[in-house]
Length: 293
View 1 (cartoon, rainbow, N blue to C red):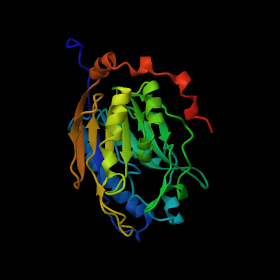
View 2 (view 1 turned 45 degrees about the vertical axis):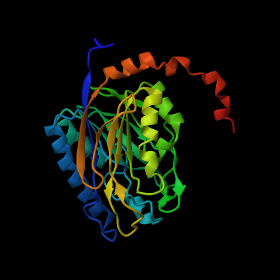
View 3 (view 1 turned 90 degrees about the vertical axis):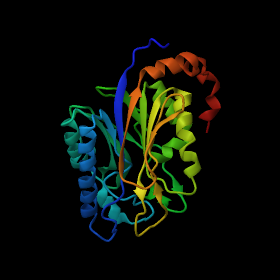
View 4 (view 1 turned 45 degrees about the horizontal axis):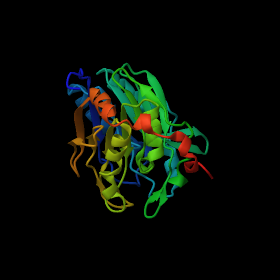
């Protein structure tokens, strides 16, 4: 095992607060402020040699789901679209693959919580649409804004690694996390927006558990700050990377805008799976009751 050749990929996560924390301003103005702020972090990631970069859930705006205001439908756009292409072009200058989570408009009245994935040369590889949509009090009225995803659990073969995406509330469901592993993901990114309180204790339990159960890395992002006028709580940051043994290898602060960078040795995946043979020993024929109505 010790002679296994290392295959190191440098990855980055951006956790970021809303610089224009005034919901009364035009939607496009709020979005532009967030995009401009993130472009600075993309450049920082390039300078630091990041090869795969992931942004937070609906990165180019506030987490508007505490409202049920249809004005936020204006925030949606096509995927790929102007915002995802802008970020992809900025990343490609540094030969950096990038995951860009935005609010997607498929057609009039049909919206998804989506992440676009681009390779290091700016090529669009595809998208993941959030599968599990919460309707949780207080403040998570997502069914007002999003349809459940309909694209399965795709993986994307970037220049550096095969990656998957699982968005925020998805992380409470081990079934999709398993699908991503079965489909070949080496790194799964989970862009999120979650506040202190109800689910905070799960933040450091569920995703290491997915990494262990599936023998892959995870990059887990949470935004920071408090967003007016909803003020549903503090987004507590602490974005982190976890390895296939469930060990946290890098963690960001609780309350600062930050680019978190970590080197992930993909050779650890083979090492761990040679010990814990979960894919060999799983019994799909015995799990039928999971999908019974």
